[in-house]
Length: 518
Image (cartoon, rainbow, N blue to C red):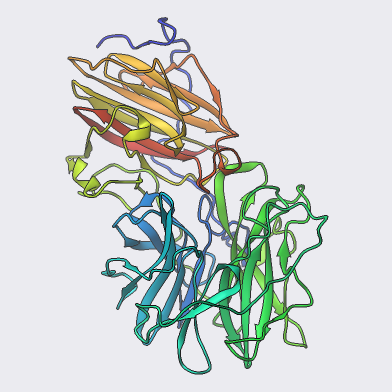
């Protein structure tokens, strides 16, 4: 086996054997909310799980969330206690653009997900439906509501179905929920915060409707979902009629990060849900203090109802354990490691902005995932990504690179911003700031085999390589990636571990392992 030489420095890699002995093989640990003593600690879904929409059906809770450019999209989760969540599939494969802020509902025994999506400059709202939560789900139906985001479904006192939209508008739906019946109308002006607060923008969005004791409650986000840590918030209004008038809660904002010293930033975009014991909760998202890169994580907070029929947040700053909701625990979480023996793409994986038929690039057999190359760099190769759940973590994979191909490991934010190392089987290419050094590798006539390991230790990216999976050499450039997030590059995404295959050949991946670090 040839010695691996980085094109950047044309020098022997340093640090042989580094980090080899401390790799905890075979045991994957991630953050789990349930503390096992009747309490939980946020987040209930660690890592990038923004805009959560939760639905209770009997003793079961179901959840979906924004998936943006990742497909399969609209991931579905199941819980019995709002704390322990288990994945049950996805609701969409067809790429209709970046999916934002969905609403999961059940009406007359059928499940619906209403969501906005954006492709280029066009933004519209869609719906998919299924007779069982596990699917099969329909192809997306375009509702033709351009210019709006964040639809929230409701049934009025007249028995008709409505979608509430960003900016305080709403529109009637057809009885089957698959068409718009009429034109949007303005119904709610929102609530205005003091002008001296540090926020991103007013941005009235995310309306979710709940019904209790003869009142419709509208829970809305304002203040912008990024920008200053103190920007995002949850406000509430209520009405006796779905058509208004809507009265603002005297306790607004219900939720807000008041100081950048709090453990969770930019908290907002809530859904109200009642548990099986009759207690109410809010599920919403927030950024972990100092970790914009992890994306917006799912947070659960108890709600207390006041004698005058309003509600207030009862969880404090969410930095301490809280009593769990009623209900039984299901197995929690999604294993990120993958031995590729499932015969198909595992539920932890998603392509970034895939083309139609993207999955045809993949083949599986005997513990190998083979990926046909696409494009020439990570930006045009639709990498496969997973959601990181921890401030510090490590992942590794074995790769066999065919002649003409290029493969590698990344921390991937978007096609404009990523970092990592790739190889054509003979030489390395460094990816940093969404650029390549050197700008391009010539295709190799022989290819090669190697192991690659990436550590992201609280924003410090380190890569190690090996020719046998036992003796490791440190790549001579480390990178700092704390700025790889929305406030720098837009798009509302998160920094994700990723694998890519580019060029004309195939890259064969074996034994992907993810491990949280202390």
